Image (cartoon, rainbow, N blue to C red; front, side):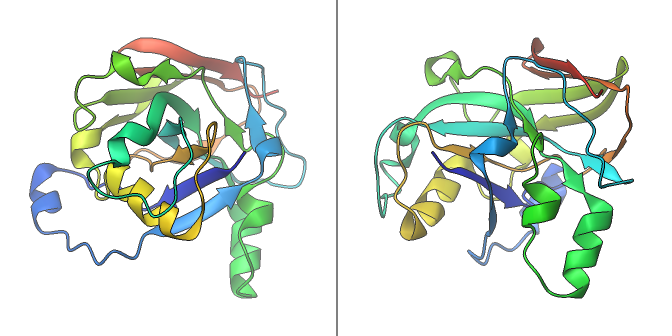
Length: 205
């Protein structure tokens, strides 16, 4: 099972989307399977960071095997959608960037990817208009809609499948809204929803 993610994939508004040039160079990185936290279990705050940053994201689950997937077929590879948090240990990331090293320690540690149960793709009639949001301690901190995505789900699948054979159960984090990311603290309560349905609900301990 692969856990892949795309960075910097949302704009602030529709006007910005109109002026955004897509050069096809998607920023893709991976997280190990051990970074996932399922079943709304609480997440242990990592001891090695003092600057843990949250990003709420929709996650596409792959339902069948594919390589070099064509545009016309890409949507058929999606079996479901979840909502998740992509955590970054920012201080660790800054250290590895200084040495031009990989992001693994900052993005792939245990607990770096709490994820909700997957909702079947049949629940979503329009992949270009899905609302999602994140509340921390009852306050809404991020709201997103897939109409503001730069590379849509199908384009991500097409791009990724040039490099990796996609297999059933693979997960692709599709990017966070362009505003609202911030620092998380021990004791914080995170709740993420898709179309108003609370799916992810846990505390940092």
